[in-house]
Structures are given as C-alpha cells and as structure tokens.
Length: 317
View 1: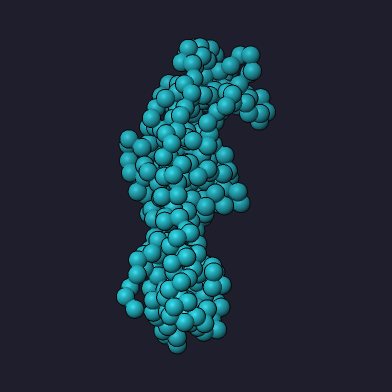
View 2: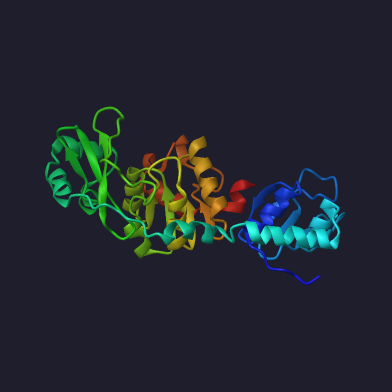
C-alpha cells in the first residue's frame, strides 16, 4: 500500500480510535507504549504526524509499518474495512490545528478601541506612592514609561495598558496597591490578545511566554523585550493561534506551581510544531531559591533562566 499523507490530528484520532494512548510528542512524531510487545516502562513506539508510519525502537520488537497496517493489525480489519475507516476519517476530521484555529480568524477579529485620554490621565496621575509600589516589584522608571503604566486614584490601583496584536489600545489591567485585588476595564478582550504581543511579534520569531504583565515587564527589563504574558493560568484557542502565527520558537517561563506547569504543557502540546523550550536556572532547577515566578528573580537570574532554557524533551524527562 502506498504511503498516505495525513495530518497530525488525523493520526492522533486513529491512535485514540484503536486504543493507543499518546504518551508525549515531538514536532514530528507521537510517542506511545508499543502495542506489539509488553514493555510498559518506555514509550518506544513512534508514529509520524505526517504520514502515520510507525516504528518501535525497542530492539526486541522492531515493529514498523504504515498507519493502514497499524489499523489492520490492532483493529483486526481487512483491506476494505481499513479503506472505509480512512475515508470516514478524512471526511469528518479537521485537517490541522492550524486550519482549526484559522477558522476562528476567518471572521476578522474585532476590537473596540479604548480611550487614549483615559490612559494618558492614569499615567499622569502616577505619584510617589504608586511609583514606590512599582519599585517594590523591581519595576523601574524606564519600564514605567515604556509600558505607559498608570495609577487610578479612585480605585487605588496601578494600571497596565493592553493592546491588540495590531497595536490598538483595547483596555487596561488594574491591580490594587494594597492587598491583591484585580479590576480590569470592562469587556477586556483577554481571550483575543496577550500583554505585549504587539511589540514582541516585531522583535523576534522567538517569544518568551509568562503569565502576568508584571513578570513580562521584569523579563523585558532583564534584556528580553520579546516577551508576552497570557494574563492568567489559561490560554484561549485564539491566543494559541496568535502564538502560532507570530513565533517559530517559544520559551516557556510560566509560574513554577502546578497551574503554571500545566499551562506550559498545554502550549507545548498544542503548538508541538514549534521549537519549544523551558526556562531553567541550571537544567535541574526551574527557578532558584524556590521562587514561584520570574517576577521574584533578579535580572541576572532571569538571564540565566532564559540562557539555560532546556528543550521540551529534556523537560519532560
């Protein structure tokens, strides 16, 4: 049988349909426990995302073949039943992640512009107390001006402007000076854009991903302006597409807690076509001194974490 061409989603759908669970993946292959021998300690079974060709790297097994052969062997199906299965797969499944999310962008995303006068007023209202708050977070004057940070006297909150990927001002993020309260402008389109994306996409094809705007500002100050913040512990399909569109490599610098690691894994898994790496202080420790996020690090420690970033493969193993 000739080698067919498939999409990664189609290959994964086949694997799930015949009961083979994906353990992890690279940019080109899915890795699973081999269904042809009893080793459940090492995911030695690799399946190409492009054509479904599989091979087991365990020397005692060495199983290999086409996706059609795999369906036949595991599903105990004949030639015509396999062909029927493949036709149904092609008819029903979305072609690729790219196409799936491009459908979202087929209807042009629309953003409502936010008042520049309001942001100007908030910036002009910065006083010594609000600046001292920024200084306490190791955010200094250059960054305050660069990101046009502000202060709301009425809310007693510092403010951070948010822009669309095309640089339209679309709202503000607010955080209380006292305590840990957040209040954003109405209808803030967090699912459609990320903090600093409009700048980062112009600077480098490598984008550093963190969670909070303050963490992104700290990374910027350390010498890496190609940084964005997801503005929380989750990421929308639209923002995955933004990353897919505007980057070729991604360095994950999410928080060191379970939620931050889960977010990083979601990005790495859904954007496996990218060169993914993880910020790492020395290859073993995520962040030094048990820091919970990059905002707690010195500039030199941030530089070390970015410089010593490890591959996704190294991270999961």
